[in-house]
Image 1: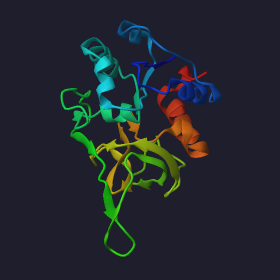
Image 2 (image 1 turned 135 degrees about the horizontal axis):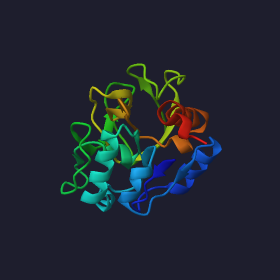
Image 3 (image 1 turned 90 degrees about the vertical axis):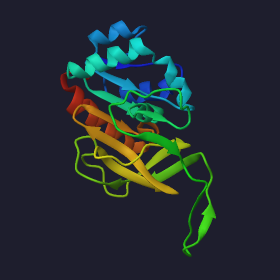
Image 4 (image 1 turned 60 degrees about the vertical axis):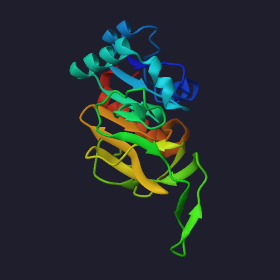
Length: 212
C-alpha cells in the first residue's frame, strides 16, 4: 500500500481520486511509525513551504529509513521542494535534503517576444510545457512539450536529477528522478491525461505489485 502523507498542506482529495482511478491501494498514516508498512510514500503539498515543518524529526527519520529500505518516495509540488535542502520561502525550515540546493522565488519579470522584459504574475498558475532533459521511467511516454498544470511561487533549481524543466521567468526543475526518489513541481492529478500517465508510470514501475 502507498502511504499518502497528510501534514496539513496537501490537496489530498484530488490525489486520492487520481490514485483510486488508477486502482492503486493507498492509505493516510496517522503517525510516522506506520511508514514501516508502506510499499511507497507520496508527500503532496500546496501553499507555503513553512507547512513542511509539520514533517518533524520523527517523520523525517521514518521517511529516510524507508528510503534506505528501498521504498520509493514521490513528492508533488511543495512535496518536490521538500526533497531539496530548503527554500527561501521559509529559511528556518529544512527540507529532507535528498536533492542538493535551495528553492527560490520565481522572478516577477521575464523576457518578452521583442527581447525586452515584461512583468510576470507570481504565483505561476496555469498550464506550461515540459522540456524533457533525459529519458526516465517516470516520464515514459510523455511527449516533448507536454502541457501540465502548475500553481507555485517558488521552484527548485536544475540539478543532475532533473528529468524535465520548465521556464517561467527562469528555468527550474519541473520533475526530478534519482533512483527510487522522484518528484514533480506541477500537479499530475490536475494535469489531464499527461498527469495520469505520469502517476501511472510511478505506480506501475515504482510500486508494482502493491498497486491495486
